[in-house]
Length: 450
Ligand code: 5AD
Ligand code: SF4
Image 1 (cartoon, rainbow, N blue to C red):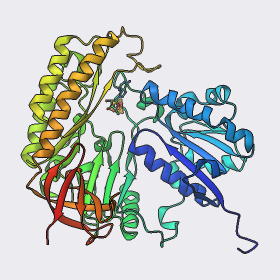
Image 2 (tube, rainbow, N blue to C red):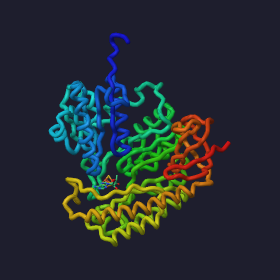
Image 3 (cartoon, rainbow, N blue to C red):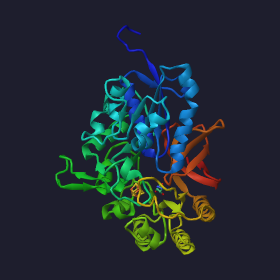
Image 4 (spheres, rainbow, N blue to C red):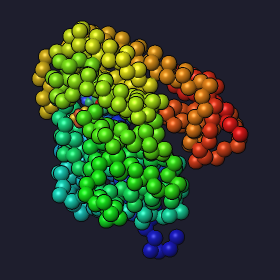
């Protein structure tokens, strides 16, 4: 080490919640990397611990506070250890976090984390939770500026859109992540090209309302005008070496015609769509401020399946939303029966301070629990059926890692199922045809085709 090389410091990041947070954690690691920090897997060895938090349900914030409590002995033993809280709890609670947990040094929101290096150097205030005019991505180290020798995993996330203007009555996202903002197409395309040049073969485009993405056509498009999300996907599909494109999370009201058509005619766009519906009751959908009916959702599914008949659909459901009756619950079960989901996340309603539904009378907890169980049992049966349906079929599998058993590799199918294959013949990053032989609880088992 030469005298001018800064000493390496170690950064430990724990990520809670959604894939957007996973992406933000990577970008924060890159920003701190420019300050001489390298990532460590070992919290007790770190010079800085960053908790990138989620605020979507009550339990998420509770988990943060108990994790902070567990850091007390470490901080007592090493007072120079810096502890930072990032993400949506940081945004929502701000200074309250330090008041409740004085061991926290830094609080940074999802739109201000480009300031983390200056915060860590003590050049600016230790709490940064405004919604700045400037675009954080413009102030983060460009991914192209990082060491080009850094090979990456074969799959990567890429945030294209952030924030939400939908204001569902139960949801904190419009308040913690702010208004809908789309990143400009040229920036997205250059970040994608850079990822592919480092070995990435599959990109998952991220946004709280990713299919609401829109932006000015780049100068390279002679047609000019405005691009929608479908057009962006078509442009990404032109990148040589990018084998797979996915996106999440979508809103039913933003499924444009061109996006639906892209599911039929863009080969790289994978046959998988996460499209949250939350409830199958029109009364509850209205109370949730979803601005669509159950029938609107079902007709949309018909159109998507017409474009791509083999698509696997997944969704999110909330049970026990204030005012939900047995009939409303039955309507949700009926919608699930009608669609047939490959997988779904289901949650018991959790009242969030500051949201319109917060003060509404709650459903009896025992009733909500029973409904959740019934709904999950149905969804599990559907998941099994969709997996079983894969048996005997040949699917593309992108291999991501070695299995726990020697001679076993694990990848994801086109339909996002985890697939185990006994082979010593493939490398991480290979995309191969695999015949599915059987289905286990949460994965498939297959054999390579020659
Ligand atoms: N209570 C329960 N579930 C919620 N979600 C969002 N807010 C709440 C809440 N207050 C769920 C929705 C959303 C997913 C990310 O989290 O189903 O789609
Ligand atoms: Fe939350 Fe609704 Fe926006 Fe999704 S669409 S982030 S559930 S407010």
